[in-house]
Image (cartoon, rainbow, N blue to C red; front, side, top):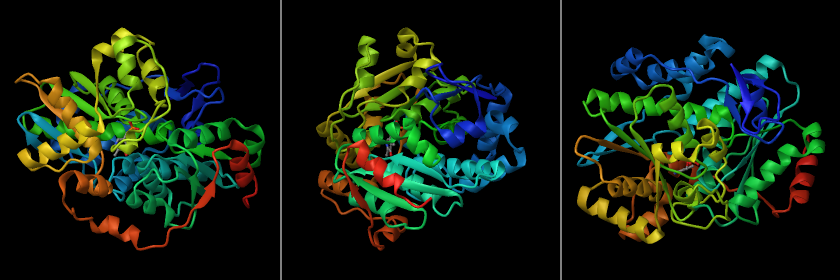
Length: 437
Ligand SMILES: *Cc1c(COP(=O)(O)O)cnc(C)c1O
């Protein structure tokens, strides 16, 4: 399989290059030349399969021809050592709980998969210099990527995060690990962090000095494996006889997760309609209404992993639908919520249905409720993180003291280490150039 750039000004690349380099030379995002379609009967048979078996079918269809299929299966089995259960919330609303991984959020899936796939290709290529992963985080990505890559030989990770804008629990998941993980505390917003990373990839001097790559959802190996759990969710609903008319709702920030869902749809997954749920960072919502895309600086909300003013995967969504606003708007609906609405939803769903939402999942639940499902439809929203990752917010809303799972508590015991930097590129570059290779 070859991959092209969404900007169409860079040469075609193979999977190895796409995974190791992340971004195309023309700053575009890589897209597979074709999207393999999975046979209807195979999809129907998934209801009798485990998450790992389902993921292996999807992974082989995409990546199988570009690497040793046996090695690929091993990576799938190794990274997906947890399940993604579908849980009933109320009426015909279900949630896909994506928080059983090491950092209790969906990004664990893509991060672990990408770490292993990069490791495989770096070894195969016999690179002598370390590859340096630069990752900008608004909260959750940093922890997932840092834990996914921790101890992987040949790779250094630099996590850039906005000072004071991630929760203390999130922060300790990437500032306490040591080894090949370095945390950089940036005086600025998430968009500033993302801009630093993007500029670094286009700086010739820096790239000649050290091989750089990204682990944000711009990397194919990060976002595409997320399509695995859409199939797994379908299989579970199918088993329960509830998959006939499926409406899938995705709390969205950089739009990597929903893009993976759209890929699953193109691979043949029977989904009737998608919903992108946003907080007050609503550029995609506006695009759906007006056909115009106007990036804006992000604003802070309770659902901080969705505080994104210029979603990087928008380019992929446009490309998937040949830039047709009509097609995009007929398959995807948008909803957006204020902090007050998020708080109301967390509180109502907890009181009425005894389900504890996190602030991101709350946007997803609310959008499905506002969409007004028909009786024959099933609504599925993605619960993207465990509520305890946003303990301060959830406790304030519900006046509770929710328990922190042991997995999270373990991070909080170690000492936090990070390096403070400004948001100007020159300082960031100097820092990287001065690192031992
Ligand atoms: C990253 C994240 C999102 C947004 O996902 P995108 O792929 O960036 O759209 C939503 N919720 C949580 C908890 C996240 O960590």
